[in-house]
Amino acid sequence: MQLTIFDKLLIFVLAVLLHWVLAINLGKIGQRANLKMGNWGPVITLRTTRGLDLIDYLARPRRFWRLAITAGIPVVIFGMVSFLLMLILLSITMMRAPPEPSVYTAPRNVLLIPGINQFIPLVWGWLALFITMVVHEYSHGILCRVEGVRVKSMGLALLFLPVAAFVEPDEKELFGTEDKKAVASRSGRVRILSAGVIANFVVAVIAMALFFGPVIGAISPHDRVTVVDVVPNSTGDLAGFQTQMILLEMAGKKVDSLDDLYENLLTGRQDLTLLQGDRRVDLTLQGPSSRGVMIAYVFEDSPAYEAGMDPGLIILEVDGTPTPDWETFRNTMNTTREDQKVAIETDSGIYHLRLISNPDGSGTGFMGVGFSGTSIDAVCVNGVIFQEFPASSFLAALRDIPGHGLWGLISFMALPFTGIPGFTEMGFPGFSGWISSFFEPTGWATLLGDKIFWIANLLFWVGLINLYAGLFNCLPAVPLDGGHIFRDLLHLGFLRIFRSEAKAEQVTNTLVAVMAWLIFSSLLFMILAPYLAHGFGT
Image 1: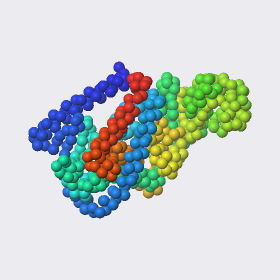
Image 2: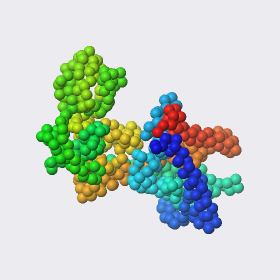
Image 3: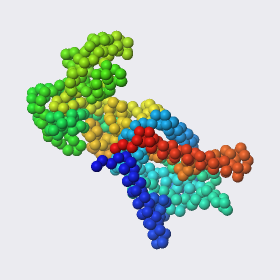
Image 4: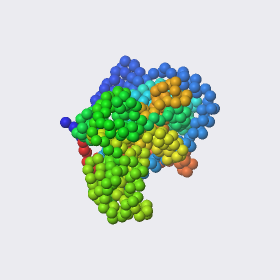
């Protein structure tokens, strides 16, 4: 029985409730036995005082820390405003046109939790998340000591798995009470609260600089032929071929290109050696092979669309003229004209259509199909489609990301989910799995061998998760760091306007509460909108 989205959500809620009961009981046991264990709602907390001496030691250059964090506060404010505006714009867009439920809108993938989010690998994701949490919380602790605020303990928070690290300052000294003034000034408190976000941004910048610099520079491409599609129930499917298999050898000879593959297939039955993950697989392939160009997308209301052509089809001939590669296909289409009837032979049949005028104004015919620009030429045999993975172009596109400024930063943040358009579908997981087979170490990394990919993956995920953690904590919603910073900045502003502590506090509390409600309701809306608009499916 296949579970619906609603069933999965119900199971998740029940699991959280059971964990909540466990957390409450463990918290009571911890209090009775005087253990460093407690709970905050369903979250189990484990505390220790070990490591506090290190925080005191690191906080010694107080002037340096004050200057460094003060210089970074404008970055925090910029992140607060920009991320808030992005959140509001996304909410408005989803209100106007809620997306269909998909892998990208699934609740598990909205949460950036490794192992739960299917785009974030478990091992690299948790390692990067742990580094992110330690950096964030230790920075808070260091600035607490710089500003004279006592740190009571540090520890881990668990919700099924470790979900956060924390440093626990003395809140009475940090925020003050009705009877006692805070030890830290408002400017000092802003520095303390900003420290974690600034540290995350600094670590993200360092990790990204290393990833896109010396590490990517020590990786060279190795173009290889790969299986991009297998027709269900075809001879190739029954023989065991699967997508993302990489072709290594035919009859014991190395295969480097589609030309090698096609020429060998013309001689008849062939024994192939392929790479599937880390495993070598021997399979047999026999039958008539054909070459053509693979369609990446079909324009709506075009002749191809009306004829029922779909992305993934391989065009073999245009009106009897073979089109084994992109150049031949383009030259053939340049001889056609508007209103011309043509027969398009593909790997799944012949389509008859009437061409329209080419939008480029050349006067040639246009069928309404597009190509990826990187993977066009293809070989099809017995339902198995082969293409060359353009590793060189892929690596060049990856290296080019930092050169696009703000758009490059957005592209980097989207990499795990969207990948590089035209190269990878369903995101870029780093140099792991099948994709690492298309690359090899070079230069200074030659001695490291495949371990260069470990370094690349660690830097990639550390940079990405630190960036996301910093931006999320910038949001002006209590209990996030940005919420407390927002409160202090508002209070200082209103105090200058009203000249009354009580009035400034009253207006500040109201606006902070409204902002927190706006942000968390927007986040909840973005998770539920696709299902509220289109219903709960499987």
